[in-house]
Length: 205
Image (cartoon, rainbow, N blue to C red):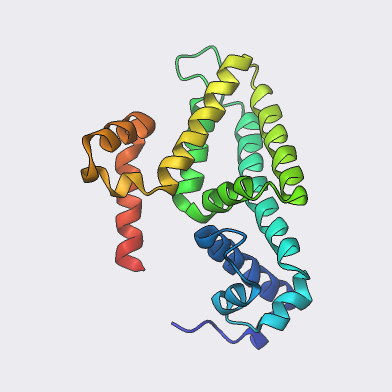
């Protein structure tokens, strides 16, 4: 289906469309391999229009990574402020983990862009943003009253989920017993939801 004519959209709506398209494009191919022309084609606009709004490819990538990682941080803030997390319970940081899982299942490009942002951190501006946002996320997790060990384990588990999703492990369990075992270990009860979500994407894509 062709995108609606951009002339019918407000400037803010057109800007949002480009950001969403850039998130998908950078999420698929990363920073180095994605051009502003590829983003423009994804958004259904001209390449000069993308440059006019965002400037350089780096400036566009920074905004996309900032937006994606900010969503993760803000999701955690919302859960912590809701009072759902009780670190002394058996579930511990479970509500935070559930919220993160729901986020990346509903919008996998968020996770993909975040990972590409980490990988592009040799670019000074990207690295500075990635470090700042990871620090903010750690601070939010620590606001639950958890120990540093609990925070480390929680963040490490989130990174493991990112890696398993990035390599498509849930969709390729039959490739080897080893990858199946690791995927089941990583996702636990969430695995069925991951696979079901991917199947739904395939049917509607």
